[in-house]
Image 1: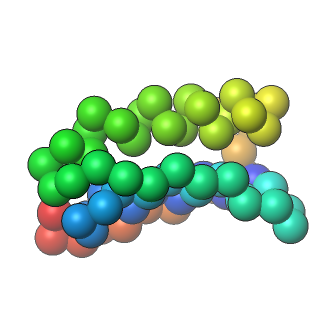
Image 2: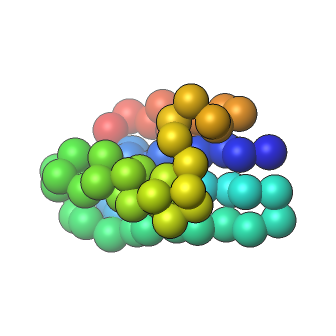
Length: 66
């Protein structure tokens, strides 16, 4: 399964891409700065995996208070 996961409701943002038994990830930032990094990280992970968005099986995201 190819799963992209986004977390932006915590103090540190993270993006992870699960490819069957392998996980690629990025994390960092500070509260209020997540939008500056997250989409770039998505692009980096997809490039690293040799995938495009339409090849993903699912996208998961947090729906927290942030």
